[in-house]
Image (cartoon, rainbow, N blue to C red; front, top):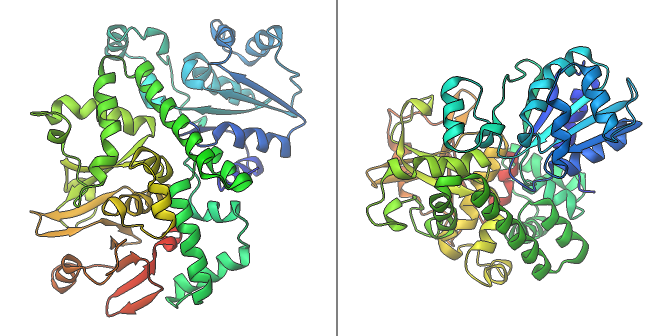
Length: 450
């Protein structure tokens, strides 16, 4: 069983008053169900798992009254159980397929006779809301069964779940806590990592770029170290994402799939900006806005919006017409990109495809730590890969996968501008930690400490 940081979030919930039901949300196959099952083994005598996709008839338990007694009686009659008060965790899996269960959470948590936990994917897509306008929209989409009558506001704690980050990957391959702590101290003190350890970490970093953080792929790599089997898992996951698009994107499915399949080639460009004209001549933002947002809501991709000002919050200055799209997992990106890319990366060519994998990796590490993604580009004269809120200031981060990490004219120009205040200027690259003037150079793998 892989060790995940999400366990600490669930432990905090378990040790608290448990008045809110955790709702684990995230892309398909990031480990939500496996995590909850393992958590239940650690803390509960009884565990009841209800998967509303696997057993559609279970939704009928929520067709009538939504009080705890009625629901538990209905579920018991269907063969679920045992339900022992104070000793049972009830798990609603694939809850996006049963809006009635989502509505019932409020009443189930108020009674507090059992503990409840939820998990779902595509939540922002399936759930249309309960007002008339949304109901009309759902009718147009032939999806009226997926309307949530009332959200359990105040009785639910939404927790985003992502693929394994690089630190979790190091746990999986057996790197000791002492080594990780040493790396963290070097990061904090801006001191070089012992060279042998640095070289080993770069090796693991290259592995992570092609394996990624999808739990099944990581588990396959750890247990067998067979990249072909890892790639097979990744291809299966990518296919499942395309299946979801076909099933849930409805009238937009062709456009959503077109955007999804274009992400690798768009990231392989030097500027990495997603240009709609590259996938369809004369394509408009209006036509592709909803299909692209579908991928964001599904958790399959992340937006990085352009901003031309160093001003917080970035949401007030961002240009939503100019953006990059990053994939949820760097391993899936490698799988969808050039054939045999894995071999080249493992042998040191991390700049392949204009460093698409490394920049996607940085984006994922930032998102997993709760950051929104923005890049700076002023009329293509000054370009910075990432800028984000760092404490009370603005951090600038450049990602350099090539041989010359000190080639950063745009960053130099920004630092010379007296009117612009930067709290941290960082370049993540192949090299060991070093500081020159206001810029600190970090190994790429140290993005895990951002």
